[in-house]
Image (cartoon, rainbow, N blue to C red; front, side, top):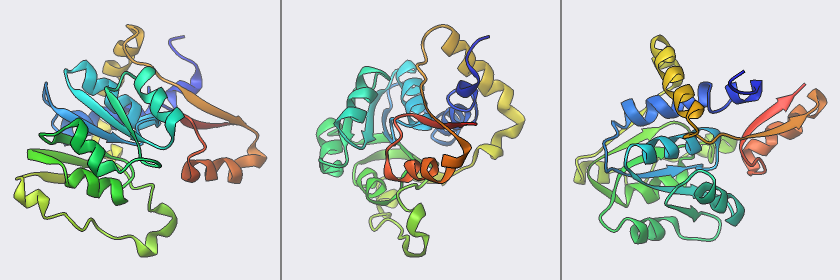
Length: 218
C-alpha cells in the first residue's frame, strides 16, 4: 500500500489535487515565481508550497504561531514563514520579497489577502481557494480595500473549486503519487478519534488547533 487511508483524504486526495490545479492552472505557475501561501501548514497550503519549490520558486508561507511556522520551514521546505499572530504580514512580505510576489495562493481571505494585494509584482496571479478567516462571520464579510492593485499591477484574481477539474483528477493523482513515492512530497495528518467528538473536532478547523490535515477517525 502506497499510503495509509487518511493520507488519501489529505495530500494525495482532494486537498492535494486542489493544490495541484490551483497552483498550476489557476495561478499559472512559472519557474522562478515568488509564491506566497496562506494557511501554509494546512493540507492544501503545505502541498502548494512543496510543488512550487520543486518547480524552482521561492516560497513564503503564512501560518499561526511559531510552532506552525517552524514546521512549515523545517518539514515542508518553505523558504520562510510569517506568523500572522505576532507579525505584520504586509511588512514581512515586503521584507522577504522586496520586488513583490508573482503568486498568492489564498486559503484565508481577510487581512492576509490585503497584505498580498499590497505586495504584487506586475502580472501577478491570485488564486482564491478559501476564506476560512471569514467563515464564522459571513454576514459581515468584506472585500479587500486595496483590490485596485489588481489594476495597477495588471494582475488577476480568480476563484476556483476542485470540482472544476473533475475530468482531470487522474492527472493530479498520478503527479502527486509519483512525487510522494519518490520521497519529494511530505504529508501529514492530525487524527482525532470518536464520532461523538465531531462538533469539538470541527471547531478545531476554525480556531487553529489542528496541526495538519484534520481527520476524524470513527
